[in-house]
Image (cartoon, rainbow over all chains, first blue to last red):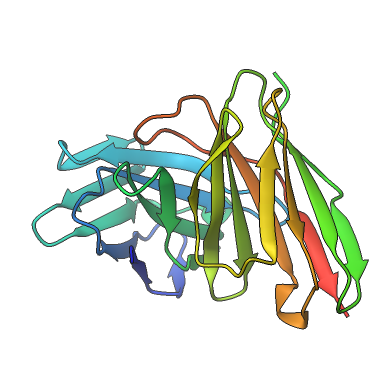
Length: 113
Length: 114
């Protein structure tokens, strides 16, 4: 079945450095790739998303890249700040086979001040 | 606009019991999805409902069931609880019923099975 793999599971960076989280997906019919941030005690919240007809999207310090051929997509956070510390989830959505969004296992990001 | 509301927020059950969790989506949202979150496993898809119809189901045993009402509110039920069912159960609503789109999550119902 559909699967999304996410790496690394834990990432620790110094404030001001960049952080990169990588994901791969198995279902070639996937056409929508969101990234969610989950803070302690809260539900995940969308931070950026990309559709399959776009290779890159940027929103201030956050960017996402998509390689459909390799079925890879990545989240890039530049100039990290302590408030970026959270768990990040990548996900893939395909309309075929039903309407469901499949999530990766998550990356716990620590930004050290 | 009120967000997604899940009740109860916390509950403790014993093995063999059953539990019902409730989710009220954002007003106007007709799609509701349920996820199970456990440490190291991420968010595991349980099921998705749209206009009272279950459109997809994840790889969970038949003890996990759900339904959606005409006002889009949804419930999920777990029968014959097992220790491994201890988890955070998240509900998410979405405005449209088509391809992709932002999921709006509630804060979850944390279930502990003793």
